Image 1 (tube, one colour):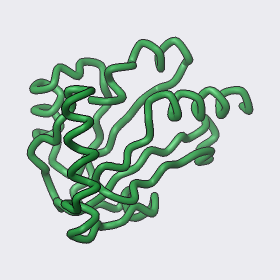
Image 2 (cartoon, helix red, strand yellow; image 1 turned 45 degrees about the horizontal axis):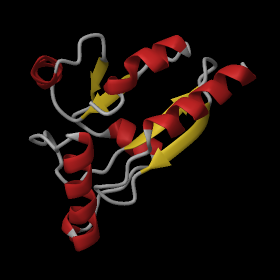
Image 3 (cartoon, one colour; image 1 turned 30 degrees about the vertical axis):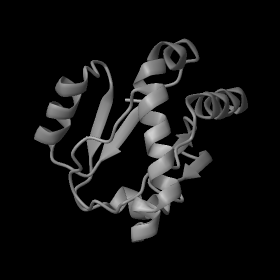
Image 4 (cartoon, helix red, strand yellow; image 1 turned 90 degrees about the vertical axis):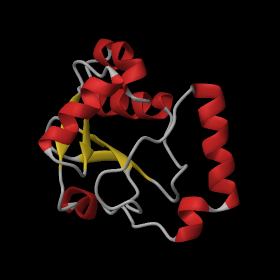
Length: 135
């Protein structure tokens, strides 16, 4: 949802967004419908092979529910009106963001250190623009 909020900015920069979830195709359809994410490409990886290839980690209990993580989550919920929905798949699987250039090279990445560690849309957009400038 966070990336989708700036979909127009990514489109204007010529950036194609895709997200990967752990659920099934039906879960992806439901996610798009429930959150109004029309136009968002949602891929599924129930075996978490993409997560493994990207180098993401499975969080410890403290990285999921530690006081600092909970505080970050409350701040995001209050300021950005974003809340974690029902998790499909491994609940402790952390995510990340990869910027992949047209040739397939990963030119930038942000892998979450804890459940509240997300790259800002501005960081992702800047990295995507830089990748586009190189190609």
